[in-house]
Image 1 (cartoon, helix red, strand yellow):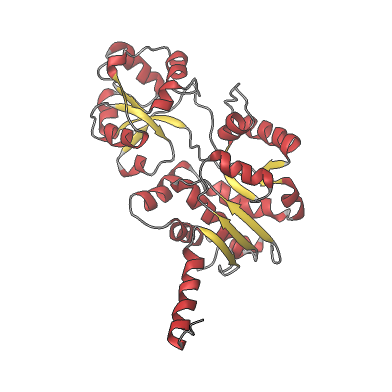
Image 2 (tube, rainbow, N blue to C red):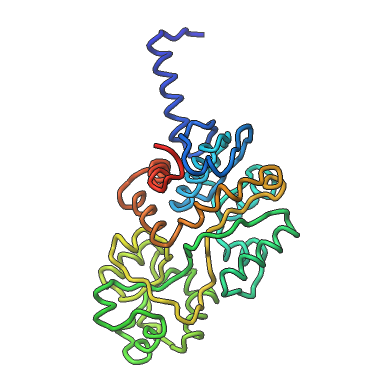
Length: 323
């Protein structure tokens, strides 16, 4: 084996340290400075595996959780960026990970296979938690106020010009002037009962097909902002492009869309062994509003920062961890 020079050894050590702090998947051990969370609970000696799906918001939430737990003394194993809901849920059920942020609507519809929607967010969370604990040994901690649900948006000035700020007003416009109510959406949204067909039925309108455009999900945001090819479109409420592109989210005044509040899903045996997890994560969950997540997502998707850096700054700004 070729021996490394002292300089090479120093460089290798630095590389290893850098890799630990920036990698989306790996082990770290309590190097985050203590803040207010450390006064709530002490997880010294505990090892927690934290996972997430692959998209921006999930990567940020994974890093927020990992760094928060590290600040209370835990050793954290990161599995951020797993591919898809089914993969990360399977990892939780098998014990490959101990906890991750999932959306209450996804838990109810996708993981538990329930077809009847529950529109009240508190009732949805309580029913989901009770059912998943009994059936799968998975506990859902109290959800965040943010709601990453389907929503309909319009460019802000255009919305004021058309006098539309709610979905009821949009439905009235669609029945009066279909061209002005032109709508963009992704294929999945147009085909789901909790998407376009259900929306038309719930709000009482029937927009002619010629006034709808099917686009890739990511292209809808720019389509709305440029009012080409449509004035309105399907978005996800916490996406960072909502603020960055100056879009207005229409109020779902009939509460049609299923709530998708992010909540920590944790294996019940892990929570029983480390009951302070719930108290440590509670203030973080309370602080994650739609506006907070939009800003965090935009710092990654628009400004180009890393999820780890964005998570650290937010936790420090909130006083949850030390500087």
